[in-house]
Amino acid sequence: MMFLQIVFVVMLVLGLTVLSARAQQADPPDTKSKQAVTSEKIQAMSREDIQKALKRIESSNPPAKKMGAMCYKMGETPENFEYVCPVDGEKTVYSRAQASKQAVDLQGLRSSIEKLRPFAKGISLSLDESKLCAKCNPALPDAERYVSLVLQYADGRTVRTDRVTPEDLRYLTGFFSGGLSYETFNEGQDPLKPVEGRLKQLLGEQ
Image (cartoon, rainbow, N blue to C red; front, side):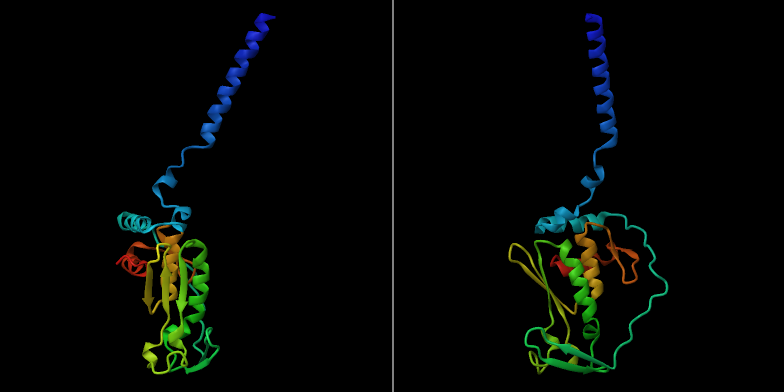
């Protein structure tokens, strides 16, 4: 009887040892997460975190580009661009010759900022479109009618970038996603390192 009990205890210990070894193999240390800034960290990042993430991009080897769709149908510039101010509801109509690139890109900007917001939690993001409205800014020449990006951080610091483009917002989406690349307009991937200067400007770290 004693011999059977000893055999049972030995088998139990061996079984637990094997299970422990398998568990260690199945869950190796997450070294990748230690090397990269994760999106969770970026979502609540401080100014110091932003600077660290920028330095990581600067010191990294840029990842290879990934080509997007080769045939991508570009939208035609409309004969007229009709802008409706979200503040006062005033309608401003631009001819094709008058419409600045910012005005034509407006839908792209609005779409891109909605995609960006989930990755930049804790940071208030907004587009200032007031210069496109003839009622809000009646005396502006057409060349000065553009959209601005406004970032407000949790510490109260505000960064404003004039003449923002949809491409700028794709840079920021890649950055706040914790990666080293951003998605291009045709669903490819380009490295962030070559546009680091623009990133710093958009983030207020120039």
